Image (tube, rainbow, N blue to C red; front, top):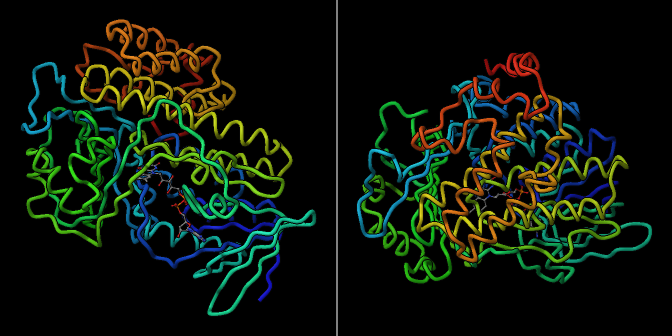
Length: 501
Ligand SMILES: Cc1cc2nc3c(=O)[nH]c(=O)nc-3n(C[C@H](O)[C@H](O)[C@H](O)COP(=O)(O)OP(=O)(O)OC[C@H]3O[C@@H](n4cnc5c(N)ncnc54)[C@H](O)[C@@H]3O)c2cc1C
């Protein structure tokens, strides 16, 4: 069978399907080629305010109103209650010493709660990917995308006139001819392997492994009276020296849980052994283990020996890797979705002639490097929660500043992820991360973090009086309006427009 279109997209995860929908709206004919079938398990579930804003921007810019309900918990529940998702009001962190029960003090020095939204209605979500990705692939087809599942590609042939992809489908051979190919098959994906591309080092990132699964009947982590939000309506992170566990609860009874750990810690725990490794980990985290007493595994465990990856080349004359195929650092900062969505925006811009491939490659790699430095520094400080907490403030300051700048219609204030290209913030935060990994004096590092984020701190972060609990406080935005080159009335208008008041 021979098929022909302007664009071939390989991989029908949310990234491939969204890219396909946007390309259709740009008037291109699109083939979407998937190795497996939907619904299927996929990891990568937790959104952030920036990811949801980027989703909203794609919906608005490319006339895709069907995506809008997915940007917020409330709309999603009303319009797509059959598509599983979780409520995410914020980011919860608890610091554990291996082998000991979790305990805290008056200063709440072993926890950090950062609210991302003031109420459930406008809150972020965790995507139950089996449902969500299947829905998106159906939506893509409704827009005229030609979808080919259970297709095993084997050949890539690039000629001046276009690319031919060869493979097998329904027991026969199949060929796809396209002017441009986008690979959305994930890290170490199809094009990277087929073209034999080199790997690229991610700066300052230690080798880490991951082990994860879905469960039913996971118990509750104790709630805290007066907390900025119910602590489990969040991406919950349990941090320990050398690693961290995530817990994400969905509204269909399923909980996603997993661990990321340095190679050394993963080997000590025997994470490669799957369930036995998980049980060994829980035995060292007795307070967390209580949550899993009645838990039942759904499907199996997945072990990833090496989480981080970066391809040495991410574009060619007639092809590009989505950021999610170009590289991956570690899920600690939920950076996968925003980077993927930024990549889709940029590739759409590229198809429109707005930017070129070199620009796309430069920005994608630079942002992966920025995430890598920060996550590397966070791993280096997992045994020292005060330092870890200070470093997270870089992430939260950049995130809240960027989100607000975009919502105010001032994208020029925050064009790159984590403010990577900002002339002061970018180099200063890179310097801080390097000094953490070089084990510089922690007091100086703590002071430098506070000084660096101050001009971008629009969320009342890094305030010792708050004892590590950061609710959304709208007054913070009014009092810091000048940092966003804005007046109080501009802030008020934006908050009303976004239903945040
Ligand atoms: C453990 C872990 C946890 C994560 N948690 C988060 C998180 O909480 N938040 C966040 O923002 N990001 C997270 N990420 C990153 C996130 O998973 C990715 O950003 C996201 O999945 C990218 O989506 P995608 O659709 O581009 O790719 P994928 O979800 O990887 O989908 C790839 C698709 O391509 C298909 N495919 C693969 N090979 C082929 C082939 N040869 N031919 C055709 N099709 C193929 C696959 O079947 C699949 O459908 C996490 C990643 C990991 C590893």
